[in-house]
Length: 271
Image 1 (cartoon, one colour):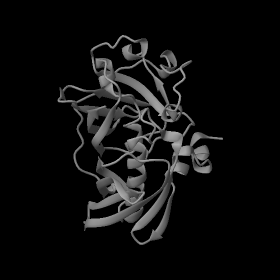
Image 2 (spheres, helix red, strand yellow; image 1 turned 45 degrees about the horizontal axis):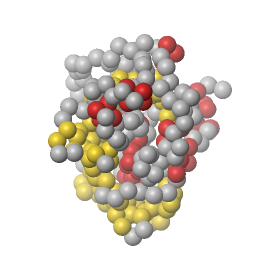
Image 3 (cartoon, rainbow, N blue to C red; image 1 turned 135 degrees about the vertical axis):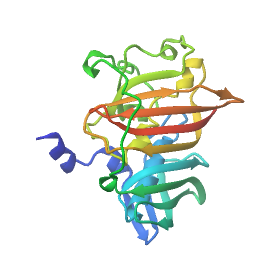
């Protein structure tokens, strides 16, 4: 069976675990699972954000997320969550709305996102930065091969290929908080616009190369530039400033065609 046909007939874990049930014109429920847990024991923030963006997409007249900013107010947990959506503005080219995710009677996540129709985006296109030149994924190593990460189930959801194991994994942080690598869903799901908020947050924090433990995201903004083609993604991640325990992390993502598909910046705090 061809990859595109398989994608259409198989419900992958990401789609199962971000499936929404409408309970009103502007309210959805989602059953968060423990299959996306990080070292903190809580579901990955990008996974929560992706569920929220999916709710906003279902509420929007325009189908393509263009930009989304998520504020992580409290950790999520496996179990039911409610997502309330509200339209801020409907326009001809863009529409903006807000989503608020609640769990246990408390708000855990707030997202503001703008949607568009990328098929109608016919303005000038220019890119002044090329995709990093990486060898084929077949010629690189899986940094997590033969490594057990108890409880970090999100590591089972994604495959990585990198030139050499990161220093922190060998007990020798390199001092350079940057990395370039290939990435894809481990179960064969192809990337799309709705999965990119998760994939952009699925790698280990670059500050671990400074000898720091994983950090917690305070805010994450993603700009979605193109619909991704099937196949591996190239990701380039870096941190340049660490101030008072807060740091940024920038991530650029290209698809298998060499097309830039997403840019993210998040602000995080060290544990």
